[in-house]
Image 1 (tube, chains in turn cyan, red):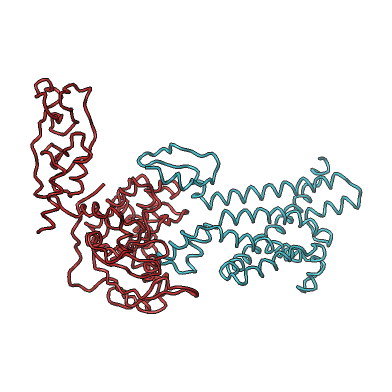
Image 2 (cartoon, helix red, strand yellow; image 1 turned 180 degrees about the vertical axis):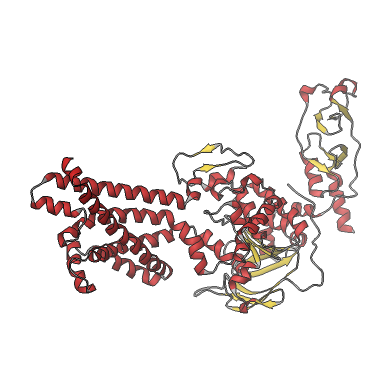
Length: 242
Length: 371
């Protein structure tokens, strides 16, 4: 604790770097995965190919990727962008499948209704498909967020400054406290990001939580309340309500 | 619930609103889904497409808004070939109601109803104002406005679906098995509601169902599709029940079609027999012989007392009522379901007007046939 307080500035600086290095790839990964996933979902013939390739990306050893990327990108060896690029690749590897699954999870009747009402494909994607894809998509984002935060530490091995630096440094000096602080902060960061993502999801899907409560015509208070958020009513049950 | 059949009110002699001209739809392999369909749908009338599953009725419906493209032939809407029209704009010019309502789960009731006006560039505020009006039109309380679809019952969702289809005030409504996912009681309600709405709005409605009872109740004209996408018969419901063109149609409309066709025959000129009546308070003064119809102080029927029984303990309730001016089917049903063997006829205010006899109904049929 003493060491932690004495080096607060240094540690917070590393935490901030760590956060940026794991959140940027999450955003870039999402932006790349949406068009990729949408295309794979629309064009069945290429779906399997896109999904296999993206899964294979995830099997590349992280250290190898960190070392190789500077040569591919032409960046300097110590550039943190190498790390961001590598983590983006892993994010894409996981998120493409999430996007396909998320789009697949939308009720076909809803999509047909949107077409029948006169939505053109582009507008439909943003007005109907994307909002409805949020719950499944966010499940994927949460996995990637955690995986990014833990993978980012490996960047310290190639000289990128972040919480991983506490591990390499602590190891060199046989200083356990430093390593423990690194572990605790990495954990905290992961939990914090997860909570943020959950909050964002709730904000984006008020309808999904509303699905837990059902109201009977004419009464403002719902007579039935379901405890678990996001639980959809059984259609057969909904049908017999007057 | 049953209603006397409405006489169709299409604009006579006007150009049909929707026309199929030798339309065939075939998929890659096998038999056509729709086989050389030619059909004219009257303006302002309800046309029902009915048939077993796989008969091409939904495919035919979807060719009207280009969700399905015909393999050959043309579909005309308002006299114009739709093949050259932009699909999205064409679809916005027609209301569409689906089986499971197809509401957008992430939008409130108001925003669901306002979908098509919003697509047409109407401001959100205007769209919501219009949506509020429509809630009332389809008989939903304003308190539902900000609910999400999952918070509604099946029947309410269907009403929102109808409201959404009406939002841009399109001349045509396409309804694809709209009431088949709700229970029979709610379905009957929605059917009556649709007929009531149609009397006010006079849209051209194309209604797909696999339920022949729904078809004959709702339709001004009914198109019966046979397996293989062949149009077997296109006729008003009364004609369909009375004179099916072939064994397929006869089989499809059902074995009790003779009884059901009574729904289309008005029961005017049916003789009314006088009834021995007494109010609950004056039972002691009533004659002991014969069946006694007990009425309340307002003259509405309460129940029957068998001959000799003159205490309220022996009161037999039940039996359907025959409202004057309704159909022979209801008259017969009142007679058959009455404990006394004679059905109770009531006037519009619900007061006892007399009794109807099953034999008179049958006699009425004989004279109808002779005349």
